Amino acid sequence: MIETTASSRHFLGLPVTEFLRDYWQKKPLLIRQAFPDYQAPLSPEDLAGLACEDAALSRLVTYKRKSDQWQLRTGPFAEAEFPKLGNKDWTLLVQDMDKWDSDVRALLDRFRFLPAWRVDDIMISFATPGGSVGPHVDQYDVFLLQAQGHRRWQVDASPNPPRAFRSDAELKLLERFDASDEWVLAPGDILYLPPGVPHHGEAVDACMTFSIGMRAPSQAELIVDLAEELAARLPEEARYADPDLVEPSEPFEIDEAAFARVDQALSALQSIGAGEKREWFGRFITRYRAAGEVSAGPRVPSLAGAVASLAKGGLLLRHPFSRAAWAADGPGKSGNALLFVSGESFRMDRRSAHVLASYDALDDAALAKLDDAGRVALGELLQRGHYHLKRASRSRG
Image (cartoon, rainbow, N blue to C red):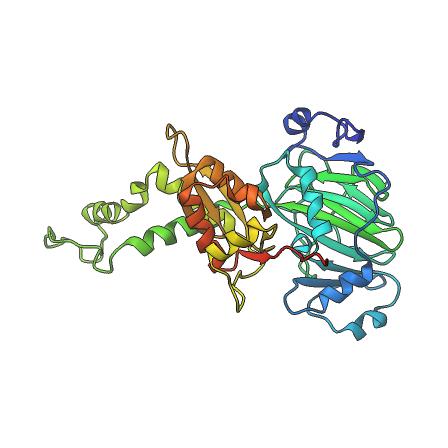
């Protein structure tokens, strides 16, 4: 089975356990009407307007069919550029739309069957008829929600698809693409694609697609980041040394004694403990592919001032660029936890870590769930711009 129809009981058209067992990171799945009668919360004009902003990550892909030429441009764009593009064969893409629009962000609530820290962003693309980014492969899981109009999707779900890339295109496009399956998606349909599955989408009419992509750091990224963290701890005077040096029989040979000293110099790579490793990873994954810098505004209330405002009905709202997760502070340490926020870590009890990681808005009741360490961490995060205070509106008598 590669196609299902969603129901009120099963968002994916099948139980989550079955999806994770049979499809997740294994094979594609088309889910018809996962969002019945879906209405996009923003318009193509809204998307184009955001693509003109410096802070937005936007791209424009155009295709010349007669010459089979693809062009990629990065934003920000001028508003006057869009009318000149014509009415076919171009696509506008804007990353991190869940950070810019709360209604778009609300879609993520339907994907809580996955670890929240694995979700990267929601990218939105608008395409005119024929618009596409070409046949390609992604190295991460993605859920493609058709939000407006219709798009034809082709996938190559064969065991060993061709993976060579074209050398004449600015995009990383497949040199050869042979579709094994093809569908036209309507608003509310979702196509799930695991990593490494070749696919090609083309707009049938003017359409918008929401791409819910996962975070999947490469092994190289993990190793480099961990090595950099270890390197930062080492003193400058810790160097390759050979106080036991004897006169070499061959001056140009790197002998076995030298290799043994290198192994000793690199022993720090094995010295990191399990607890240090989990704390490093929590910091790493909450700053990996960050949408932007989080900084405090000109007027930041003290924690005491914020607490007083919350008691009167105010809210502390998390910055949309702030990323949070939590983990147990090592196995066997019941009740203790680590909170990770955009590359920083804080120790507190598990309930506090859960609240600060999972609540986008903190009210007086949420504040009451925090232990002392959780409140201290909240105060630090408030001062660094991870929260801003929304005071309760005053009723007019």
